[in-house]
Amino acid sequence: MIDNYTILTTFPYSTEAQITKTKLEDEGISVILLDEKTVDSDPLISQAIGGVKLLVSNDDFEKALHIFNEIRPYEIDVNENPIVCPSCNSNRILIAPLERKKLFHMLFPFFEKTKHICNECKTIF
Image 1 (cartoon, helix red, strand yellow):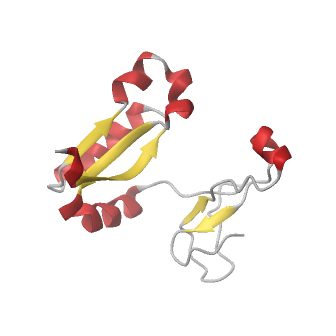
Image 2 (cartoon, rainbow, N blue to C red; image 1 turned 90 degrees about the horizontal axis):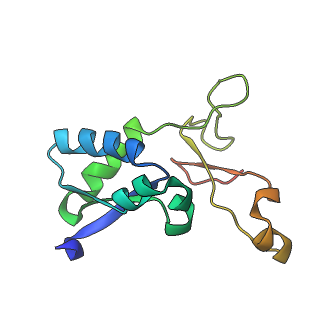
Image 3 (cartoon, rainbow, N blue to C red; image 1 turned 45 degrees about the horizontal axis):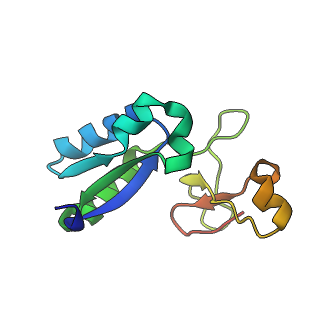
């Protein structure tokens, strides 16, 4: 059964996953949550196991991705204004995954500078 599903996104806590799951199910999309109970029993291990995984049916993946991109929170600056992409002027900005290219950053990832990625044009800045 799980072979017919793909991970749409992950969440550090199950409450965020439940909100998104409810919205997607309201739109008629089949959704499964993995590791929800594990994270609920010990939230401190969420990062170690990759958080709560939200899986959607392969048949509904594109529709689910479109809905998720409409409802997901995007990054804001210190003045609570949306961050704008320098390439396409979109305000759908996310935190980019860490690169961890240097040994120092592999050992201490919290010292790596935060970068942003545009959810529209995929520009990293």
